[in-house]
Amino acid sequence: MKPNRIFCAAVIGLALFLGGCATYHALPLAKRSNLRTSLGQLDLTMPSEGAHKNPMRIDPAKPLSADEVGLLAVLNSPYLASQPGQLSAARAQLLSATILPNPALSVDYEFYLSGPGTSNSLAASLTEDLRSIVTYRPRVKAARARLRQVRADLLWQDWLVAQRARLLAVDIYSDGRALKIRSRELRLLDDEVQRVRAATAAGNLTLSAEAPLLAARASAQISTAATRMTLLRDWQHLDALIGLDPSVQFAISRPVPVGLPAHIDSLIGTLPERRPDLVALRRGYEASDEDVRAAILGQFPAFAIGPAGGWDTSHVYSAGPIISMSLPIFNRNQGQIASARATRAVLHADYQARLDRAVGTSKALVTRIRMISAGLKKARSASAAAGSLAGSALQALQDGNLDERSLTDYQTMALQRQLDVLAYQRALDETTLALSIELGTGFPETLSASPDKVKRR
Image (cartoon, rainbow, N blue to C red):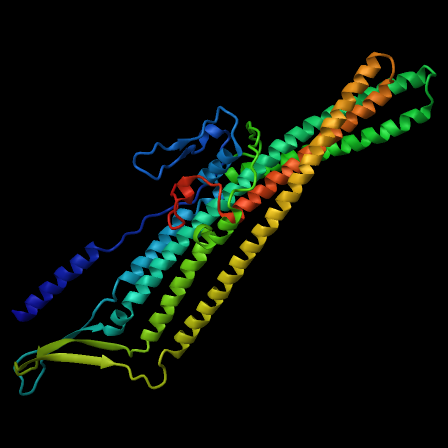
């Protein structure tokens, strides 16, 4: 009966084991692109962090601000599509670290054939590796730190994609304004060329009067074509970043002027606690430090212990402990310890280098913003003066004290001054966005509340 009972127990155990196993499900690849052809087809709702907070929704019918374009990219960018998989992989690693290895079961059943014995013999043992228990806590701590590292890394990816989208939105708005100004300049030059040609045909001007106008018009045509091409390129980059078809364009509102943040020194001093990439590096270092602890504890030799028992062919029953261990004569885990310590030293140096670079870049950007702001102030004064001169020139033309050729020169000069202001403003917006990246500021609370948390689509 005993062998039958053992057989039944084995069958039941095997059935329970198979019932808890994972099963295979196919995940076929897509056969066509997933590019959207309008904003209405995108995910437009940013999840809220609190239970009593309403989610933020972007209205596609209105011109989008640069911040809204950034959020749109975070919600829909194909570059972030693999984030849930990366987070799942990190969680799977944590799950693997928290699971102890299975105990080892050994069964030796021998059939009686001949001799003084009277029955079949059975010997069984059940052992567990103690070294996995000794190193359990540091291994789990390392896996948890790596999960937090992945979350912070994913937040940094969101951050960079959003800032890239914001920057493209600022560039597109600036390119659109520049294109309007250059087109207006080109129309002025075209009109003046037609008037000079008519005067030349009537014999009132020589052919040489047309040469400088043609050169100026050719330069304006080249600049206008270059601006139009830049605008198209920026639209295509933004569409690709958001997941839209390259032909899609939408209204972008005027960027809100942003100055230097208050308490800049305090913001620079608290970079390690706020910037997601620095948080990720710190979490990675914590994981590496726990790896060193686990490697040191891994010097404990492979040690398995458990109960053993059975009966022989004479029905003599016996039971007792069984111990199995490796002798630490050649391998005392020196290789793992050296590797873990070297990895920790590399991460320590990487973190210091990243922090130094972030602080240095932030201070350099602050200096650049102050210089650009001073240049923008002067450019605005020059533009206002040029506009005033153009207005006076128009009045002089109406009074008969100025010719149309001179008026065109004043007007094109005023337009050039407007382009100077636009260039300074664009540089200021771009540099301010770069500073917000370095400082880890200026992003919605739904993402920046905690570097250890990242929204999931």
